[in-house]
Image 1: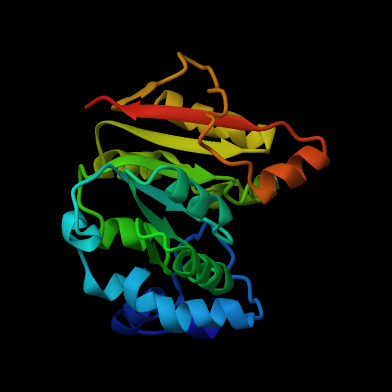
Image 2: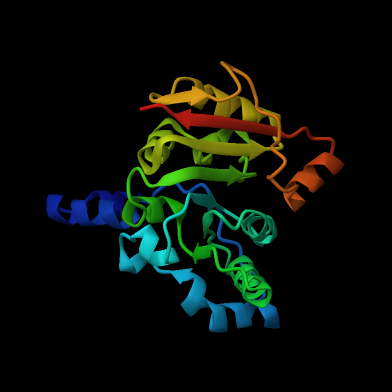
Length: 243
């Protein structure tokens, strides 16, 4: 802030502070050109699959037309793995949250083409969706697969897995529900473990300080394949809500 801005009155200072303060975000909204299929997904399939942040809290049985276990995934990228899981586990309801519109369009288009009915999608900031739309104690699983690792130390504060976020997730999970994370960055895996080991109300499914094996039902994503090509390992963490 400049010296000129610092010379404002107390009333205007409050306004300036509100104007210039920015929430630290865990993602970068990347521009991307829409393909014909992606645009068609947004234009034609959104009325069926899309959910809007502005509509506020949802009733899950009304959204899906049935009562079934609910899996929510944050940051599904281009949507291929989420669609695969929904197809392979039709007994579950899936909600995906993604800010990248081409990825949302691709998922919607493919879900419509393949007749997959157990997916719903938000194209919004996951933190806001969780706060405003998802009922407490409603989720059986929350998935966070290969989030931006923000590998530079000065950017670690942007990592989405932080103590406050862990408690946000806990409130949304049912007792016995699981927060499932995966990353191909060892330093981020260690960070996740450090945060979750001391998070109140959780139990590590694999045992204290242990990483979980990749379950058969989690597809290998393009991010995982890329990481493996670069010689990265892959770490899964699964923490159950206990209270």
